[in-house]
Length: 154
Image (cartoon, helix red, strand yellow):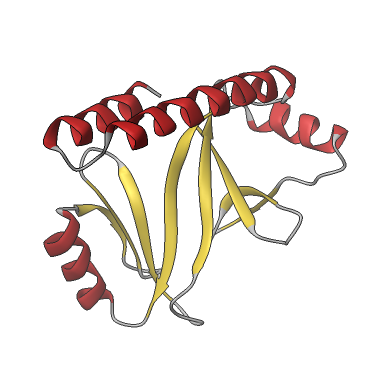
């Protein structure tokens, strides 16, 4: 939350955000923080961040060049056999996979504190959910719309 506040204040200092917009942003942030705290207290897992987004692509070289030139990411590691390239600055934030259908985000990962696969599997089962594992999504659960949500440790 501190990063968001710092960003709002920096925008205000640069003159790209009005005083009214700053106050509205801070008010919304405070309201969301309270709701997030209440939700976090009742949730079985403490999510710490979006870990990464996985995008299916047609041309790996073109996609790598885009993320390098536009966002300053670099290749962190590669799985050549499965045509997967993971990019970031200090950690992976975008995973590119040459696979059809292209142009879709095929999953995203949420990092949680104290990740233990057996404990997470048991907790998911209490909520009527099944933890699954595969090459594409790692350890994951499907959201209500069927979107794979990978679960990783912080």
